[in-house]
Every structure is written in structure tokens, then in C-alpha cells.
Amino acid sequence: MMFANWPSNRPRISHLYLSPNVTNLNRRVYHSLTEPPRNVKECIDWLIALKGKDGEKNLKALGAALHKILADKPVGKMKVPALEKIKVITKKFLEKPENTRLLSSNELKWRFQEPLDKGFGAAQAFGLVPKSNYKNVIQTKGVTAKTVSKNLIKVVDGCEQFLENIKVPDHYKSAYSPEATWDASCAKDVEAYAIIFMGVAPMLYAGLHCFRLMSLYAWWGGPDSEAAKNMPEVLKAVGYVEPEYRAGMSAANVRRALRPVDYEILGIIYDLCGFWAFY
Image 1 (cartoon, rainbow, N blue to C red):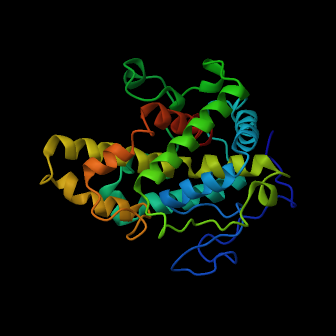
Image 2: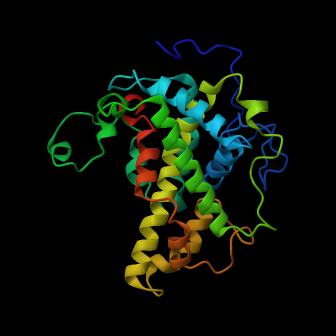
């Protein structure tokens, strides 16, 4: 079974909150991609750093590793020690009081507390839950490694465009330093970074999905709606603070910034979490 014995020479995931690669705890800066992201902002920074200068090559390799991990995994609840360590980080993020109140995290939060129900019932029959909750969609959809890589490129490009749309370049600081590169971190063991991606993907999905919902509710309700007023809090909850992002960003601004991250992108992220096998 893949990952049954995690080799001792695998990149080590440092202590969840006091990493030796963090230069300033108030402003986290990681010097290696072995450091998993702790919030949505850091997820996007991690993906962009991993993409690097040769994004097509790097993301193709990561996509192939994700496919290798997911393609043969049966429906069930498999525990992979390396993945479980990353899931703790996502669970902590989803359970923060401000995130429970603001983000679309409640449904995902329960998946870290008890096994996901994978039986076929009315909800599945009527298409009310994603198929990747209870089916290996890599198998059932005939998804190839090439397709996973193409989809991963779409995800990273969409997230990068979203960031470009909201950040203030002169003030924005990535959570990953220039030393955190594919060649320095990932090239020797791509599978380890596929595990990191799978572990933080629910956190990334929760944040981006919340942005879309909140901006939609604000569009319906207008600038005086609760959703519109809460947008700065949502940005802060996922890791964005002024002056890193454009001052006074309204829900309408966020909605426009999110155009590159459509529901297809969200669906790709969701499917690559591997809920059918690991939750």
C-alpha cells in the first residue's frame, strides 16, 4: 500500500506553529516549500512559489504525483501519516471561531472530526453532494495524469490572477521567500508535495468558496447588506490584511477579482482533496 511506511528521508514537516523556517512569527516567511501553508493566503503563496519560473514543468510533475496517489485509492477511510499531519493544520484553520462564523467551513469541519458518510442515499441520488465524496472520480471519469496536470495549472493560474487583482504590489509580501523554490524543495520527492496540496486543499476551497458566496450575497443585498459589511473580516480571516490588499475593497471588487476562480476551478480543488479515500 502506498505510504504504508513513510521513509525517514522524506522532507520533514516542521512543528505546526513554531517552525524553524519562520523568521518572524508576526509575519511568517518560510524558506522551504516543505513548510505547509496555514491559511488561504499562504495556500495561494505556496502554489505560486511552487509554480516558479517553469510552471508548466513543475505543475505537470505535481499533477502526475497527485494522479498516482489518487487513481487507485478505494472508497473508504485510509490514514496516511504524512497527510494526517497536514490535515491537522487545515482542521485548526477551519475551527477558528472567526472562520466558523465567516467562512463556508462548517460542513468541511465535520469531515476532520468523523468519517464522511459514503453510502448511497437520497442526497447522492438527487445530486445534492459531490460525487467525489463517495466515488473515486479519477477512475469513474477516466481522468488521466495529463488531465490532472492541466486542471492543476488552471487552479494555480486562477489563484494567481485573483491575487494580482487584489494585492498592492509595493506592500504585498509572500509567505514564501525567494529561496523556497521547486528545485530547492520539491524536485527530489514530488509525492511529498502532492500530499501537502491534498492536505491544504479543503482550506483553499473553503476560503475561495466563501469569497464567491459572500460577494454574491452582497451583490444581491447591496452595499448595506451584512455580507457586504463583513467582506473586510472575511479577507482578514483568510490571511489578507491592509496594506497588502487594495484599501476599501468592496464585495463588488472582490467579485470582479474572483472571475478567474470560477466554479470549475472550485470543483477541481474539491475533487483533488480525495474526500472519498482519506476523510
